[in-house]
Image 1 (tube, helix red, strand yellow):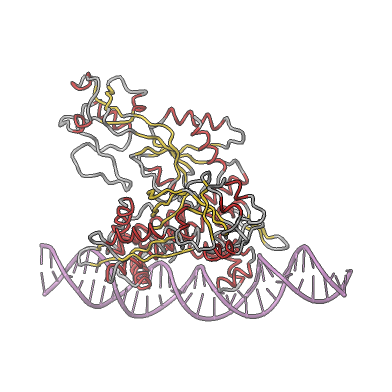
Image 2: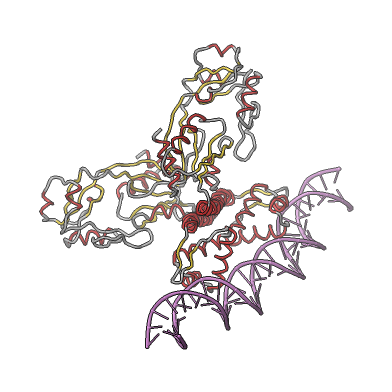
Length: 282
Length: 282
DNA sequence: GACGGCGATACCGCCCGGGTATCGCGCCTG
DNA sequence: CAGGCGCGATACCCGGGCGGTATCGCCGTC
């Protein structure tokens, strides 16, 4: 199977529409139909159910969609990492570290300092990204190493090392009745009709069903809370640098959040090893 | 990058010889040279150092070799798993479980029994393979789930669940002076001049340097030990069904061996989940 | 200095991937 | 029920690229 075929299939499987997929791929629709047809013939199975109205994935098609995405990520990673190795060989070598914007700020700063103090340290490019984006960057080679947060991020498929564990706090508008309490139970926070929990986007950009406001980043979140339209439960470290009009109240029974450093299991980079060493020594 | 290019590059990088690589790929040498050249041009870096005598990998070339193997495994896995999903949809569905031949026999039998008793259990094809081969099968999709042994097998990149932990024993010819001892220290066994430890092949089929006899499977090993030409340190469970002319002596300070069940992190198969459930409930 | 091994280059033919035009088939609609 | 339309499949053509053969250029080695 060629990557071209996989790319074509993923496009159709995502669009569920040959015409739109072809447009997205920048080709005409007939070659796309042929390519998918050939794939199905070679695999000996129907991948897409062509109904009179639109297209649907078959069982094997769903399997191929998942596997093809992983395979294409691996191919992309191969290209990116080779390119970066070429850069490192001639110019300034660097590693890319992916971290969630607005999280672990202090820990990140300490890590960068500690690593920079090591002999032979190379430049560290920090890729700040949205929630849950880090694993994607690691998988497709845009990042070499990442800071993740269990249980929120999916650490499956990576080597990890625990760095830090912390409880969570509820962020409420200052002046809200609950904000004076010494601590809160998780059930008390999640059930507030006047302050719903916000909805974060899935990796594909869509939002889960529900009634809370949609947020995409930390700024939107704090603003919504300040407006009295939402509340949130975040790791303790999120209370540093909190706006004046917001209050943090501990939520002892919320799951503890562990910050981990993660890297692709077959990584051989000395820079990655150095970062891990520096991180675990913090 | 197309998988064809990756396959070509891996062939040359492994053979370190354009002619032989071309032969292995079933094409002529000139198209191969051109393909590699094109790859290098597009990546903007030299991948192979063409010396007067043979070919050597550059730094970026070594990176690409590692990444390309992973990517090609992922593509193979996509094809195999789709094919198997197609089979499962029409005929008898099955999972493939990879296990090291001659290891964990009893545990494997119990696992298969326990899983078969579950409602909705599907057929389990057991792929017995050589030491260290299981991870390969998992990576390229020939297997859906595997029994691995830490610290021998590399569990990186898989989800795992510990099943069983055991000490190790030394296998000696009956009648050897040490065979009467109640236990042995690891250093005593590894330093025997008359009974060297055998050498196991690497995944690529080559043997590590050293002086011990080369073995490829358990039968060869027991035969060598019986002949008084080698000894071995193996998990306790390896003493079940031992030949009469061999003796097992505990080695308490050898690292404990943990049998784990492992599966690809993005696996969605209910059969895999059922096997894991059955295994952890043992 | 002739030879041989090996990768690069030159050149050619053909297949396949991509394009346009058109068809076939449901489904909605007046 | 006819006509229109949306959408994927099919027919057919064209060009680029992949693979083939022949050959060159460069080094070692007798």
